[in-house]
Image (tube, protein in one colour):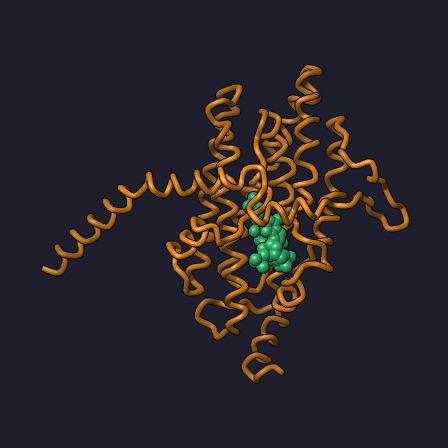
Length: 312
Ligand code: ACO
């Protein structure tokens, strides 16, 4: 049974009115947003690691400059998102603590290794492609700060997707047979984890119904996954690559591609912390936090000095 206050809140959402931080909101709405926005922020920050691994090995100055810019954008996205979460009454320190303690989730995709240079192109193409598919609708979500942060994030994600696809065009259309084989190998490894980014099937998605009612989610996990497959198949064809799914087939009746079954055991195993790189990722984030202690100490000392000076 909804209270009058909850009913009024739901009516605002149904009317497409944005909810702002100082507005009344149900506690569960606040909690859901903190959960999703902080997971999203952590994904951006942890997501810097697999690609950061290749900055010093990029094959040209141009590719290095592009990759550096992309990884820096991801740091920026993490910061906008932590700020959006802070408007809901949690601190960035609290959220980062949860991550470092291994209690917070971040996207499963960032627990896979980047073995070759083709992985960098494939991440841009597939991972950033999937991220855009999921995030464009979030520009219209009900919570003001999150929806506004998404506008700039999506513009930058679209650059990330394009640079990845451009890299793969160089390998697949202009490159040697060996370079094309390297791209095919990367696609073989990243395809299924990219489909898992959209989350469990609608039948298994615990939060979807409530999040859709609150317009925190506009489309379901399966709807977005289908759109992603439909958009990506012709892009793979243009590259001359084969998607590693024998069941992938155009279904004229549905007007969509049918695709094979996702290995949900693998997905849940990664969520539990047992993916190929989960431990390495957490270790790297904790190390970066410890290495940055002197910067935080200096900033605090400086702020205290200034405060003491103005108090005089
Ligand atoms: N990786 C890790 N965890 C996941 C993933 C995934 N790919 N998909 C779902 N989950 C988790 C959910 O966070 C939830 O966990 P929790 O209850 O402990 O919080 C659980 O699995 C159940 O899933 P759902 O009920 O479907 O959860 P939800 O409604 O939150 O939908 C989704 C998941 C689609 C990822 C949603 O949270 C979302 O749209 N998030 C914003 C986008 C985002 O975070 N993108 C990050 C990757 S893109 C990038 O950073 C480049």
